[in-house]
Length: 434
Image (cartoon, rainbow, N blue to C red; front, side, top):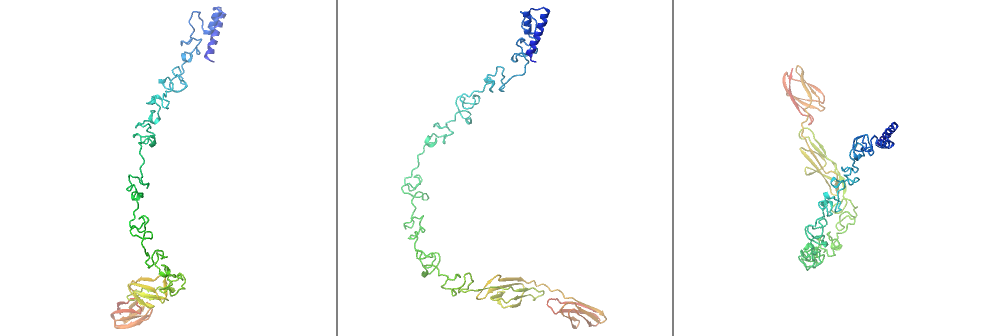
């Protein structure tokens, strides 16, 4: 229950008890019911909790409290707007956050510029935040503040954005080049000539910038009569092909090429050659041929390397710079064969072949020479070609893959062998005859 209800209940109970005993008059009982204690009319008001607040106004008569909380215990300061100034009468603006020095009210903005006076170095003059609340300065005093003055440190006027007035430049001859830079201010001329007229160096009436020959007078674009292609027909309109040498009878153009073979009709002796066909110096068709390649043979042993030149229609072969007929030729070292087209022919494909001959040593022949019985030497030829053996003073032939017995005197005998092939190296040695 509330403190007030408890206080009334206790006071009434105490009054009833006194009345029942007949010790106090009814008026005193009523007063006791209001104060909660027995006292005479001259006694001070009752204060049961001793907090200095009479019980008849103390909302918490049995708990010591404070006046600002109506006799109830202190429960902490109240600050409705949260500005640190309590609602105990100190805050003159309890519902607006403010500053203690302004009694809890917001700081004033005397000049209404949105910056409060404590932060505004010019509190009585409105100004933007970027200038700290002060007015934008006018450094040159021309009536234009610096933020809109194109020349904030030079006195100017509105016609030039706050900059000093500059009179417009003069162009007396109207050529777009102002007089202060025009070297010919009384004569119109382009800027490329500093305001002066374009010169006519050759005096032919055409200014140099449109004269194709500014240093040579002439009637044709400022040039004299020319013959650019050197065909004897002038470029004055007479030469219909001024960039191609031609003939007068063809108005300076080349003679026609009726068959399109690349040779003009005046020298073409075959004027019906199909277009794209190879031609000779007379404009006649050539037969296209391909040179057959030569055959190189690199054999072992000296003087055994060859090259075979084939027979190929319309082709002339050169070996080492010399024309050669078809056939086989012994060669050595680096061998070069060239092909050329014969008259009436044209080559396609390869026309040069090269080969380096190695001059390698041929393998040694295979044989067996030994004495198998007294006075006998058995010789075996293990090659596929016949051989001749010189055994001491005797010379004998041994067929391919065959063996032969040769009778000799006992003792050491030297021998040498040659085969009937240049691709097998000779052999030599000695044998002890039994």
